[in-house]
Amino acid sequence: MTKIAVLGAGSWGSVLASMLADNGHAVELYGNRQEVADEINQKHSNSRYMKDWSMNSKVHATLDLAEALAGSDIILFVLPTSAIRSVAKQVKAILDQSGSKPYLVSATKGIEPGSKKLVTQIFRDELYPDNSDLMIVLSGPSHAENVAQKDLTAITLASTSLDNAAKMQRIFSNEYVRFYTSNDPVGVQVGGAVKNVIAIAAGMLAGMGYGDNAKAALMTRGLAEITRLGVAFGGQPWTFSGLSGIGDLIVTCTSVNSRNWRAGYQLGQGQKLADVLANMGQVVEGATTVKAVHEICDKYSLDMPISEAIYHVLYEGADIKSEIKLMMNRQMGPEIRI
Image 1 (cartoon, helix red, strand yellow):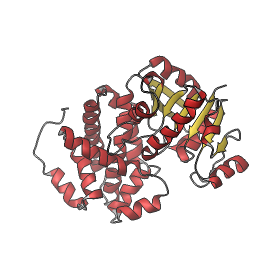
Image 2 (cartoon, helix red, strand yellow):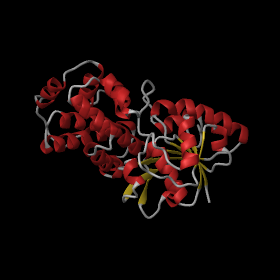
Image 3 (cartoon, rainbow, N blue to C red):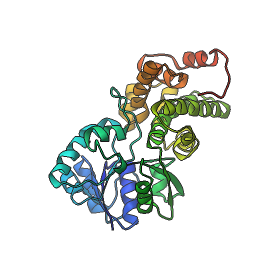
Image 4 (cartoon, one colour):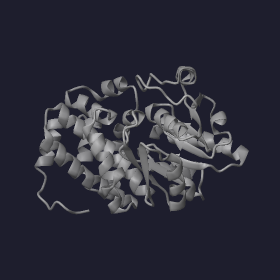
């Protein structure tokens, strides 16, 4: 039995915690809401984030980070990107006292604005400057709602150490979730982060009444942008044809379970960004990631017109129809290029 600390008691963190408990591991779920922790411990549910769902009764929730981390072999981060660095600093202080070096697994999908860093780069800054082999990325087409229903799911675990990725594969896999390994944590993270930006665009198109042709065009050209950015970061181009690339893009751009898609849909129907984010109830990672993508495009002169259009709409007050017209009238060129 493995002791696992899951940091983040939202929908995905709760479902992963329950799944790992199903697998027979000891799971401590760390969050910041007392009422959520009490409900998990007393009723084995988390109605704030997951309606009509029962968790594995062996998951224990706590607001005490030191309690969650005590004796843990693995720390699973399922937090908004904006919270990763501050929590990592707290984790570092606790680990320094214990002298332990557990595996760090990230299920967070985003790029930090300002620093423009991936989660593993933040881990390197704050936790393990010399132990990148202990960092593993979990990403792929995996809505929490579907995993909670034990729908068949396939996800990627990526690390610079394939041995450690394989070790996590054995711990995480079960009869309803299958994990594959990868040695490209950079590409896997970029795929998981930037697909949220494209999902906002997909929701916008749906909200404005566009059909299947527009959706297919957006997803295909969106994948080209994700690949372009991923290669610029140092990722492997073939990673984006896998689960954490096209797989995650498909599920996020086509499902009402995607909060990024839902946010885009509401924007496409004329709602304001501030109102959409206020009413969503959970973090819309794509709305934050697009800021970092915009800064990266400026710095490296990357051609990412869809991502840039989303940035213009969200943060510069651009009209969606005008941005679509601009993209459709761009200079002609070949389809396949990096």
